[in-house]
Length: 125
Image (cartoon, rainbow, N blue to C red):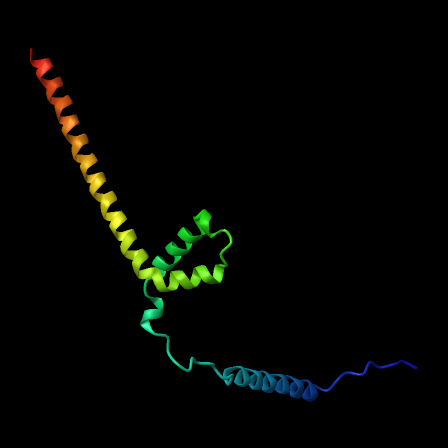
């Protein structure tokens, strides 16, 4: 007696693939219906203002040897309330550096022109 291999019916295979596609559709729909969380109150524009000044203030506070025993939260609080003053001070320092660079550039140009003029007059003789 020979044993015949039992083959599954093709209709049952088609049903299982149909069930799989139905499951995929359910999964897609469930992922789309996730609730989104929104902020109850929108962020104010002032919260993003002077961020660079705040971080510069923190850098100055941490670099100061007087603040070795001060808590970081206290430093953050000070910088949060003093960031406007820090920004004004940094702008004044930048303007002073720009003026200094401009003066040095003009002095370099004058000395270079004197050297070139002296070199040109020496060659004419």
